Image (cartoon, rainbow, N blue to C red; front, top):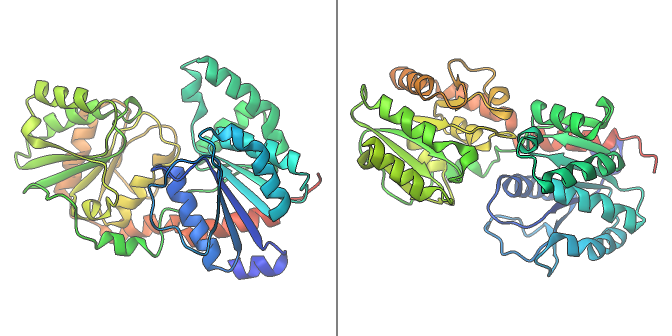
Length: 377
């Protein structure tokens, strides 16, 4: 069923998307893709931003109605948010990120607009947080169990995330759904063909991209790269992204004797040309709700090696072979990168895999999901 058929079956005309802000982040990127598509398809599309943080994105369509609140804290926007729901009267509300989901549930209750279908989306594998056993997580878990029942649907961005949140929130199967991220858009081809911002070294390029934090496990990548250059003496490791562990990673590269072959390029607004130029893209995360960068690399026609972490990578790469290594296993990572460097690129298969996550397909899933909600508030 396409969007037009869905629209004819049930009058969904107003769609409200809810985020904390438009700072650089996976949820923000995906919701911009959705907002632009919905607006392009003729839906009255509202994007609600619960804080006053400045946007890091420049490609939100002018056809999207933006409501941004002046507070620096999302929770303080609860009452004005509920008033916006009351006056706007959306047919469906879609929110992202746990604390925004909780605020959205409260806001719909306070608005009195009971006919709005509320779909909350989960992007994190909460069981990883559970191992940290922080007071913040304990409170969040209690609120999830109390309030997620008050939404109409809880969507996980991978099957693993869906199963995890259903278990944590004690949700019945019919209350949940899995809808992957809308990574591929028509605009992505233009980003792919844009010039790169920083020149790349000569030789084989091993690329990775992400915030320099412990969950991304870049130390394992550095150790794998040290093993790799024993057989590929022209290889270079290029890292896109910033974060609190940058200096520690530089120190580790020095300690491993590979500093001259590792290039920290910082945050790059458009990484697509880098994916296109890379010989292999590598993700070494300990946990990924989905793994947008994997899809972007595949769309660029670049082979991918990833850790088999919970939960997204193995779902994205299910149709491809020799892509997954155990978390923290530098030796297997190095072996798989070496294998990809020796194989000829099968760009057509990679791009076909990426197109499973096209924005049109994903947004149609959300429309069909909203239509199918048996609303009994």
